[in-house]
Amino acid sequence: MPSDDIQPMVDPIVYSNGTWCAQSEATVPFMDSGFWHGDGLFETIRAINGVIFRPYKHLARMKQGMGVLRIDFPMSEEKIIDLLVEITVRNKTKDALLRLMVTRGTVIGTPWKFGGSTNLFIGFRYSDSLPPLPLKLIFLNEADYPIGRMYPALKSMTYLANNLALRDASARGAFEPLFINNEGIITECAIRNIFFIKGNTVRTPDLSLGILPGVTRDMVLDLARDEGLEIDTSPIHRDEVNDMDEAFISSTGIGVCPVTWDGFPGSDYTITHKLSAAAHEPLIRETTK
Image (cartoon, rainbow, N blue to C red; front, side, top):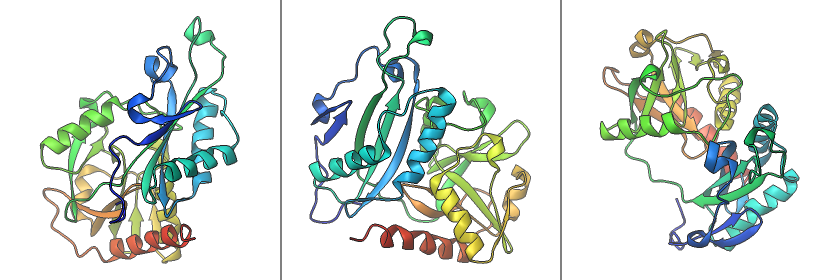
């Protein structure tokens, strides 16, 4: 959340492919490949106290995805980080979620033959307030949504299925949908990773299912190991989840939050709260000037 002395800007300053301008005046080239084909990637990056939290982790994931899509990285990592910092300065905000977007470029000629320079955009929004914890999930079948699982997974601009599922979940009073594939196996939420706890074991879906390798997911797994917990990424069937002791979701925007669903008997979320606190500690430590 923004600090008490900073009010959310109605028309923030954004970076639009080389130009700083008010969001209301920002333009995207009509032939931009992201606009035409969803041909691009994005990262949501946290800024606290004007400091970017673990930017190289996000940029490494973006570079890996761009390698898969054969899109050139637009500039040095250091230059991109400078731009991320600058958007917080220009908007006089210390706590925000930054949206870094890179597309293949402004297409000239045949799209699949285009080899021009990439386009880069940076926007931001303030962190959302969360409803009371635990957050509610609703289970949705992937077969009912236009999801295309791939390996390695990409943080693609094509978020059709995710947005549709989020709308359906919200309409039914849930914070997030949790997807189940055709084999009845749990995969991920629409925009967050899922974890279950059984005894001394943290269970989470394996990346081979085509789920996104979340930056916070990786941090949580490291923290769980530090706490002496076992990690299990074997398949999790829908029929198993009501027998779990705890469950939580993670993302850059919300950190670690306990979750529940219809049919879950409830929990005190002891381990979840411990991991949530552990995940918050480096966020503050690494962004305190």
